[in-house]
Length: 110
Image (cartoon, rainbow, N blue to C red; front, side, top):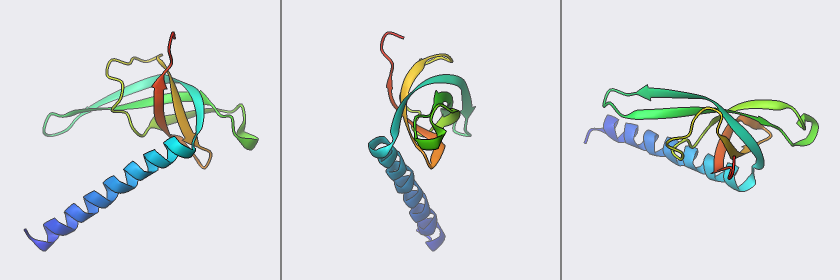
């Protein structure tokens, strides 16, 4: 394996660890809120793998921003195949980065 390939693999591994760590940190320390899926974007890569991005809207409940409507993009969208725009879910967010939210669960009975 070439040195360039090793460097690329190390970079990809470091990025994956950072992303996974951020998701775990937000799940553990984030503020939980009700959210509604407002948009679903589908993309297909060169290998024909389909990925989805879920935009959500929620009301903040932290400090000075309490009651402010916020929009975010799920950082861990590999959860709910079959969810549609308008689905109600529970998310967590960090006050310092309210646009990056993580999914907690789908709201029951909604």
